Image 1 (tube, rainbow, N blue to C red):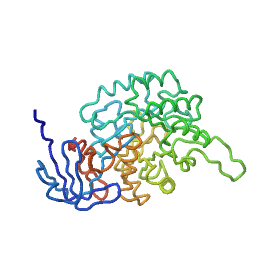
Image 2 (image 1 turned 90 degrees about the vertical axis):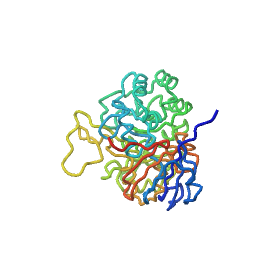
Image 3 (image 1 turned 180 degrees about the horizontal axis):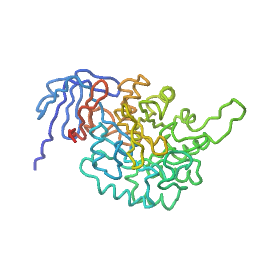
Image 4 (image 1 turned 135 degrees about the vertical axis):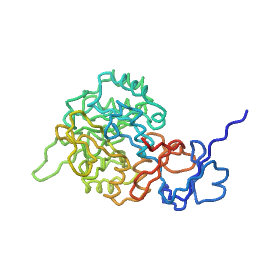
Length: 391
């Protein structure tokens, strides 16, 4: 019995963003779903190709990996899973965790997860790697829309059942480490293979350290929806909270939302984060939201890449990952390889997927984006398939 030969594609004449450098005049050979070789153009890389695409000096990088995304800026992921997943692919996000926030959670979380998976189609199954549950075990004092959805103390019966039923699909889970029962929750979820993060929280450095000992790995949207409940020791002194502690603890990676106006994170704070954490412990995210029925109309002028709710609160973003990455690079002057480590490889590593995706290396899935010097995505490939860019 003969095995069908995989379809062979070659991208030529590009600038390939590799983990450690940008390779000009690069040639990438894709066989089926897999990137089998990358390097300077040679006859062997072109041999037997079914299709050769001359890239025209565009940059080629790994597809974005977004671990914190509620929608495409306009539609909610959990309302239209396939439509949002396809739009994110068009924007260059080839791996995403469909994030269900506390404000949208229903009492029966298991049913919500099942309904989402049932509605996923062909493109969604390629792009959606699982779920990020942003709650319900968070501190009600921090975040927008806390009057909606479900917020509660950690419930062992609930989270143990969810881990048993959906542990393979729940990949990321946000909690507030200071809550009663949070440490037991962090330990149970971590032991089940979930990446647990601290968010919507006023955890002290000591409480954060306790969470780290139990398996905590991430500071969720660093410097957003956090607080410090301890008073200054003396007038004029400053008591550190979770955001300062996250800069110091090497065990913790930090999600960050780089919007254009610096509303989520001031540009100087982004530079501080970049300097303190380095390129291996920062995760660029979109935290892309959706338009709620009671959201105010957008003001006149250039479209904003943040979401402001009816209460005037900052409630996520309308960023694409390309936009978030563009803003981060503008504020920090990081290199292309550094940028894509923070926008793809680091998240893949924490998810345990770095052997399959997150960088341009032979043997990985051919998840690729082609873009210009202003990071405008021109084409996307996921598992070797070109994503239709027309709506």
